Image (cartoon, rainbow, N blue to C red; front, side, top):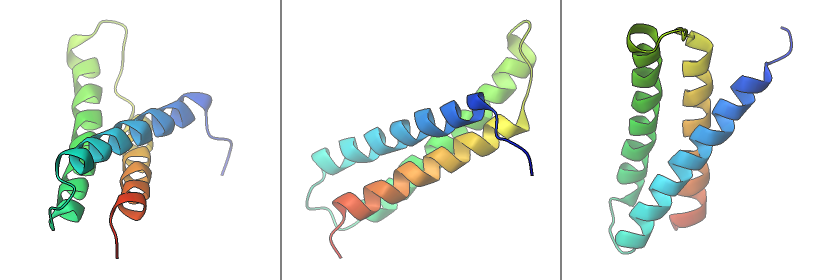
Length: 93
């Protein structure tokens, strides 16, 4: 197990922020909705899907860019962290 490259940490951070902001927006719109946890999870999954789609866009449509499965993993980790943080912060038990 070696060092994790800086760009992967950037992916984790940015996707974590994106997932958190998506959940925050859902919370602000639906403060009393009992399905918030489900909506937060859907938001997190959409963030992961966005990361996967962007990797394929880079592979097929952007010159001098390539597909990197490590980026997808970092995007997913960030999305999960942002979503879990949001659930703990905004959803009362």
